[in-house]
Length: 215
Image 1 (cartoon, rainbow, N blue to C red):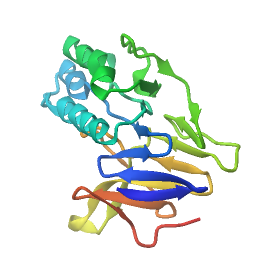
Image 2 (cartoon, rainbow, N blue to C red; image 1 turned 90 degrees about the vertical axis):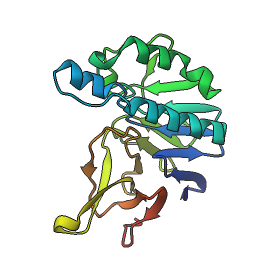
Image 3 (cartoon, rainbow, N blue to C red; image 1 turned 180 degrees about the horizontal axis):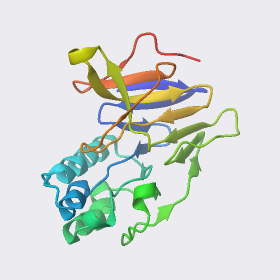
Image 4 (tube, rainbow, N blue to C red; image 1 turned 120 degrees about the vertical axis):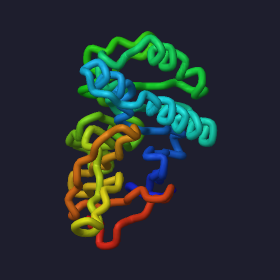
């Protein structure tokens, strides 16, 4: 866990690739892409199907430890309709009760057309000083921070054969935007520019990159 202060509001960057707001007891994550393996299997590409269980168990462990008032998924809970098996639908239907709190889905591009019983996709919305969205959005209020997913930010470290791609949190202070890493294990990533303030996730730790911009 790594603390981040935004206009005096404390946020915690979690090694589990999620964001915790202790004041609002709000747990935020993005881009689980559940059912991705099954989506590829439906297209004839063999991928193991055990990734969803690991992702959901990690989420449940977080909820049991932090006891949030609400969990918000910032889009792309589902990868595609092809991966929405009966088993996955049953798991998602039981998820709010297992979490012990309401589950809110801010709709992402991969969630479109994926009807989920009891889980309505919502537009971007405000939670205190935070503006929650799937894709990055511009905020008007000076004190407001856009927390978003969609970009799957990673940091590239090293050179040549020693290069690492590590998931990261990325803060653009000028745009007042915090990009969350993809929560799902079976996801790719897009390199973030060094001008952003970045925290990489490595060995179950959150580490700020030296030389990260501070705005």
